[in-house]
Image (cartoon, rainbow, N blue to C red; front, side, top):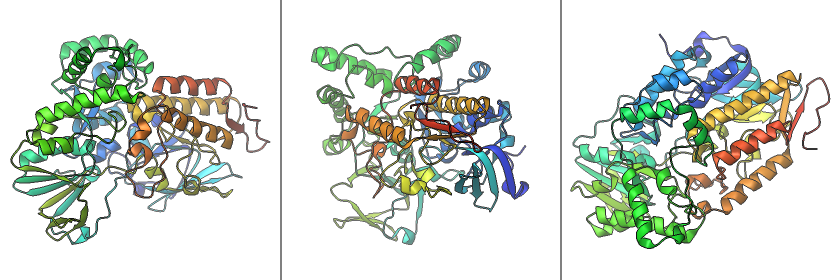
Length: 556
């Protein structure tokens, strides 16, 4: 059975109710949810298989940092009960296997078109329709467009001088060869120590003749404590799935199972505080650690206690103290960048075949024919280079598409100073275009599948409301958009998040405007607010009909 239809089998032009851009977790759920409403839908996916980030990210050690029993769809109780995860944290192959199972179980493949990249999307304000064009010249006409292209789907390969001259092989964590890579006996350089680097470095170190890690910025990482799934724990969890999902929806991260903290880190004695941190460290997982006290993400003094505890763990683990100090982050509070999980990451630096290079004080100058050279003149002979340099997060996938309207609006221009959205769901000036977990939403700071389901449900309910009201157009107002962007940044400014130069602010992309993109007020708070907006008749949106004057903004 083929994965899905390909562009060669389709017509040169197609008409849909809803065109969906992306065939990952969000695109697949959008097919399922919208198709149940009787809408004609189709998702367009650039890859040769479904799965989104879990299709592309096949690097060694790729694994989810949210526990398997939480990181899964909740829309089907039968699916929740039937699927069995082999480990506490799902690996990339297991998650992709799960996604393919979901696609088969709910017959989603017939509405996915693979190997198809959307290159442009034009909204005709008179026809009230979107026209999307593919890289093969196919044209799609759709009344609504759902952008489900993902937040971490545009790999960033640094533009190092001399890369094309390198005689060895180079790889990017987000563009990993499907057949895998064997580093046995090779001299390998890994550039980057974010989440993907931290996951792959221990595995590559066990294969390579020698591994050199080039670190510009140290990142905090906690032990995952991964293990085979405890079947009794799984049984108890599944018996209470509905209640657990409801409890998770009432938390900032959309992850349940952790008691809400009640005290400040400064309200307890140091010995008691360290006992608490030690228990969280032994338990494993990032949410548990950040949930130790109420104020770790809003009070610098409290955060310092949590940060220093982890720095001391690094110092106690890494034998060479100079290396330990380089690995111990000192330029951002813990949790303000993506908090990584690992298995034996810090222990890896005790191996004789592993070296750490401080690329902050001595940056990489160029890639050479046989390796690379630093600005300080040091040369490194390498057989393979791995770029663990991340993505153009949250906006990259949409900015790659030429999105515009016949009224003259151009998304790249609208976002020139940073992304502007209302609720992370819509952009003013672009009617009938919805975004799943876009900038301005809490998506990347939550259990992503929970945010995906919440967003898609909101979009489906919105379209249903329009149909029942005999309306066919919705657009965010400029003022609502500006107010929401201000709110997102005001909330961020009330926390410690802006103290870090992170991809949350686009800091990993040269020239990208520094605007804090995710909503960090919490999944629970966002869900209540977005649902209240809908209950008030879609306050902050203009609803209308093509053949009649627009209905007044419900906010007026």
